[in-house]
Length: 362
Image 1: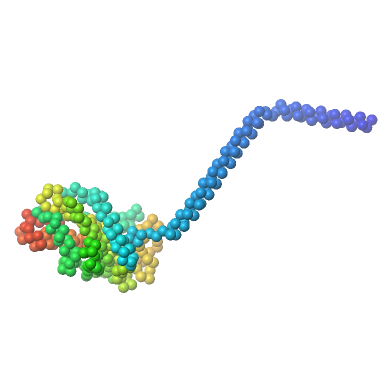
Image 2: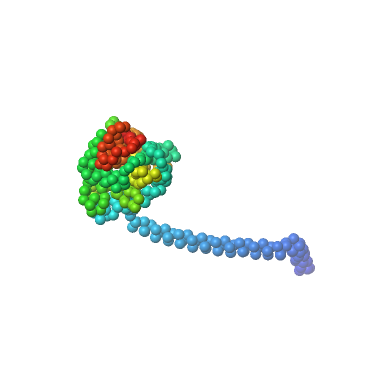
């Protein structure tokens, strides 16, 4: 009897399970489930493939970065690109020649940029270039002068004489704030065609003890024109700049003087461009590179440094604060500056039909 009851109970349980299974079979769309599972499997396989590729890419990148870091430790920036020259004679000469050659390569683009390529009228203009935050980046000056009845050869000879002789250098700075302008190594002219000068100038007022700097000059002869390049050297281990460990302005100019026939072929045209960048020597303070104060996130400057930076900008806005200006002024003095009706004084001894209209302030 008990066994019969137990069997009936099991039958009831199994029948109930059968009913549940039949109901579940009607509710679950097995085909759709299989499609979904297949899609999920494919997505998982694709993701796995993508992760493997990403891992390989990251591994390769890490390897390349490691190699680059090793090379970076071995790489040294060429000093001449930073206007710095080493003590070694061969490297010194190589650096100064590359520095001037690079500036010479920019001659035509600079003439176009400053509107001097096809200019006819004489001009004298100073422009203060500012960055987005309003701070001064450089002081640019350009001049165009016409000398009727003069020749390229004669004017080039005068320029060379002014830059390579003691008498000429004395004439360049006469009546200006420059106190001295001397050749550092006269043998460079004959050996390498280079002129290397050092100069100092007074800066009245302010905390600066004056302006000091070394300037390299090279003449480039072309079939129809002559180009003089002027470039300051900010650091020179062979010929150190004498700043006497006091606050000073370290001279920083790059200039071009182009001598070529004028458009009307009656004489010559002299075009000059010079860009001066404020540069300080501030002992016992944080060092200041030429544009450190004008970067996107400028450092906090010492009050003395701020004062000197403003003073340096104001100084370069004045006339005859760079060698490029001095040579143009010297040419005007030797060839073209004279009062109306007076005989011209100078090397050429040519009586000009008219005086140049540009008179640089002394």
